[in-house]
Length: 152
Image (cartoon, rainbow, N blue to C red; front, side, top):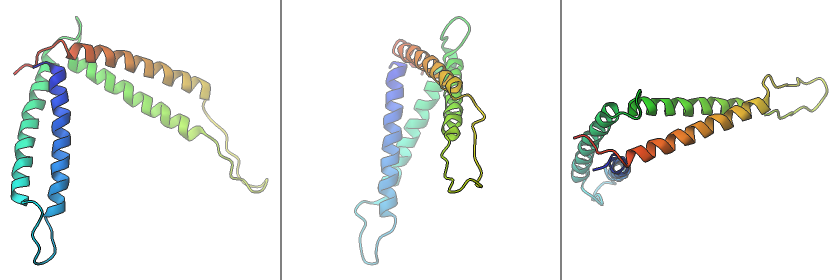
């Protein structure tokens, strides 16, 4: 199995676990003298099986990411950490930009005025730069994922 296929399967298992959890939450309590639509014990057992499968798959993905070279100096895990760092940087910059928007709710001249403490154009330029780096790195990671076999 390719790493990309394992990642798709991991996402499917996450969705399945979430859906099963929601179904279980709906049937753990019913009105007196009523029967649940599904057996909670069976749902719980199915969730446990899916969680076990998910855990095993995540271990294999993590092992593959840490043991596989992305380039001559970094593993895939290293590059994933770099990509995550770019995303965090973008979120911080987005937050700065969002909070710098000045909406004046003044009703009289005596009320407090606000002013920006950052250069909005400079921040937007940095957001564009970080976003581009993220997209380029993510594309390279996705491409690599389709060429790597999952380590068992």
